[in-house]
Image 1 (cartoon, rainbow, N blue to C red):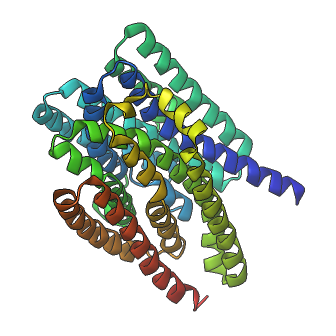
Image 2: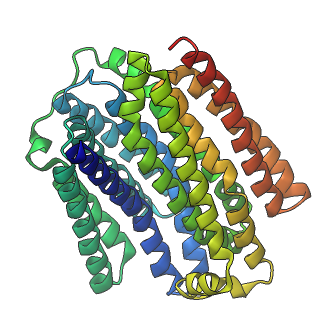
Amino acid sequence: MRDQKSGGHGTTAALLLFQLTAFVTPWLCVLWLSFQNDVAGVANYSYLLAIFAPLSLLLASPSRTYLLSTQSLADPEVRGVRLLLLITGCGVAFMIGLVEGAVLLAMAVYLAKITEFAFDVPIAAKLRNRHAGKLSLLALTKVLAIGAAVALVWFSQNLTVGLLGVSLLFVVCAWGRGFFQLTVPRNFTVTLSRLLPLSLTALMFSVYFNIPRYLLGSNDQDGTLAIFTISSFLLTALLVINNAVCQAGLPGWARAVQQGERRGLIISLAKSVAVAVLLYVALQLFQLPVLYDLFWQAHNNLQRLDPAYPDVYRWVLLLAIGPLLFSFANYLLICTQQHKPLLGITVMNAAVTALFSYAGLIYSGFIAVLFVLSLSGLVHFAMCGVLFHRAVRTV
């Protein structure tokens, strides 16, 4: 029993490291641009990332959560599907780069994001086999790859070179010789029809989360976009830690649903909710002067460029409860295999949120957008909670 608990803690720690490195990579890019005093560069990078993050989540099919909740595809087939979708996305990234006038940067941002999801395949395999030690070693290789990319940026003084370099390193570290061991499922169309609902849900969550970036970027509010991007890294850290906890528990939740262990499921979910509450409370500590000053000193104190910028930071932290509950609610329907209802709710919520956010920006300013985003997260949590309750009543 002690060994099982130790393995569980090791798995959660390794997943947390993977999640944190997903947050650290774009943060390091923004840090580099901040210390170049390139506010427009921060805004441009953030806008491109907001475009390619949802696209990458869609093309990273089958997603990690799908792989954790089912075993319907062999690893060579997973890699085959992923590679085909990755190549398809390159054409989309090239066209977007042409429109934005930054083809090379657009391709680099896309490749860095999409190749990071290559780690999903070995992560899912090791979680299913409970190889916590090997999972930790894989996480360490990812950290080393990011470190090598940082050195590449430092010596080349070119962010694009570093992003292209880390893309190659991610594939090598995640797949290794498995890159040459891939196949395409026989009925590719049918396979995609099974895989895409959950990936589309992830896409819509990313769209929902990036609504403020789309609005600010399309309205040429580069300064506010840069400050919101920097402030949101703390919110992103909150979400990735919560995701690591939920993903570590997801296989157990799915088993509890399948085996009718309702009491164990509820207890495990309650513990995860308690962790989410503690994370939100910890996030608010960055409102304190000491942590506030340290955070912005790391970003070259760009918040001093305008008296309104500190308010953006403070409201991002206070209203983080909405995105946090939105993220947590998704796992309630994933563990009960309600992928299509989850997609429908997410699409509807994102569309309504975008409409009201646009109205809020036009008539009340950017803080109204943050309120709309948080309120929509609460609504999403309530709707998913109702569907989850209906599903577990029969367990």
